[in-house]
Length: 220
Image 1: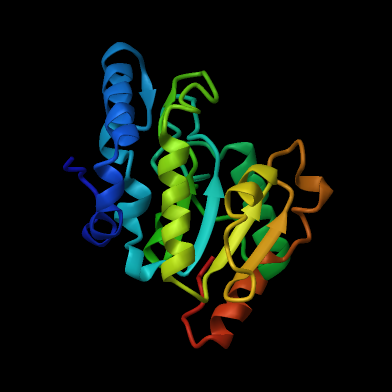
Image 2 (image 1 turned 45 degrees about the vertical axis):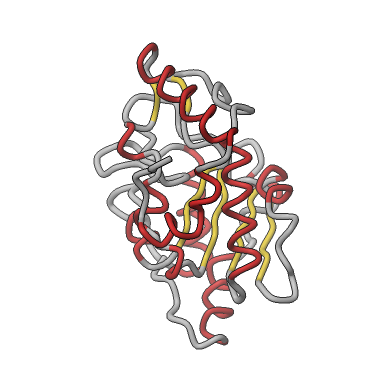
């Protein structure tokens, strides 16, 4: 099956695109877009990959579902387009960056600039029905994004994995902690951020690790 995705990812994942589950997933997603309001826009489903090629990945942040409110989801986990109000989890991410690195809240919630520096902002499920969190779970997306994490884990070393919340931590359980930096904390959502996301200092830790390996630090 031909999937419109960035070339280096196309090469890495081409076998995945031929598997029966992916064909079934594609049929499901097409049907959903034809009958319901689905986020993100179809052209943005694989935007996390298009903005951060396989060769450039140095940090991996795992989310769960895309945002399910109007105009929020843009294909990168936790990110929104310029002009869209910051969702609560994103506000908390920037609060932690302020506390950790002294950087002020940016003018918009777009994380494109992170992706362009090598941060893969990957949701476990890449589509969702409007106003229905979790509506596209267990349809095949998790199998696909598990395969993405598996490819990264087996083919790349010296990555930073920022795993916020039990869902992300479970998803990346295959990552070798001796060959990568695995940072874990509660999720940045208002329900859990005060239980250890605030004060985790993941952003400075990530940059210190990248610097140690001779890689360029991320401008968070």
